[in-house]
Length: 257
Image (cartoon, rainbow, N blue to C red; front, side, top):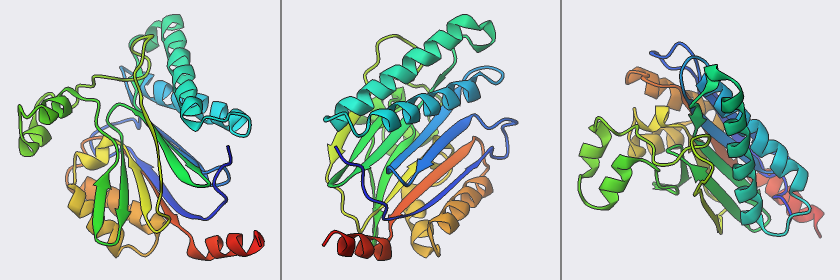
């Protein structure tokens, strides 16, 4: 299994928002191996930050060590999530201040001919291209499940008082059922990874408009965070935007000849 050769333009930014005193989001960016992670922690005091940073460290370390030896990328991501879940559980059992801490996890691993996405919770991945935005992950929340069952509509889902209730999270139980899939990837598209501090504040179409009108991925990330804060900034906001670098891709193709 081979990681995607460097051919990215990447932007990333995290912000505590306007209402939270502590930023409990964590993220990881490695253009060298094509690995990108977002985690949104939950728990009292600083436990959410501990859970999210533990998850990011456990996943990034596991994937980096085994990327070149593991033949099945889905199994690699599944094992990494399981390892992170186990590590968080052990920390919470050994420190009462961290009891019941948990976190979402969202992993994107680019390969030569595709993209592996793994996630638990409600941090989201989007594909963004010319004139379109497509959500690639399904939220693990009660409200999302009710929406899929047709019990509520999309507008009700956005304002429902239980919209933050997660059906899956790392660090909550020994058994975990992450969503993991490998898909083909058009290297004309951008990939957006974000915590719900972004998607709670602004709609998908507005996200698309901001990305389309920005100068580059880093500028887009700054504009997305600013827009979320302008709408109230009720939660921590983390965004990673991975776009194709056409010049780098051309160099790679020439060097392979």
